[in-house]
Length: 162
Image (cartoon, rainbow, N blue to C red; front, side, top):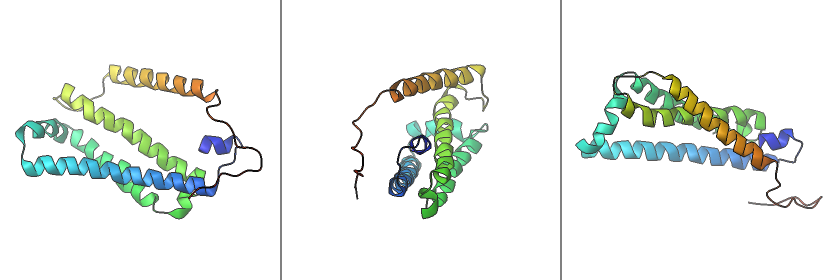
């Protein structure tokens, strides 16, 4: 949406507000699912399942877990409660970038501790994999963004919703 606004295409305050509300809903859903899964495993004391959490609670990985909860839930939750932040693209973009960046770190936290039980460290192949996969996604995005995916509205007609 921010890219559309910068390109001069009409993006209304209502659309940005809806996007901010959707972002807030996903932030709440993420913590609901993550904490719900942890609570069920912890209260059930399921040895087969708790073994997944053990490597992530030591060796430096526990600090990443706290950072994930802070950067992917606490800070975005309180920032997205503001109506003014959700109605301006310049204020909404940093929150979206923070959530996306933290999501990349979460994927790293979900996968790597199973491969390196000795503790936290970033290998050079981790960086190569991130850059390679990120490059593929950016290339696909740029390739698709050159095409018109849907018919544009006739001039003078504003889309109404909600």
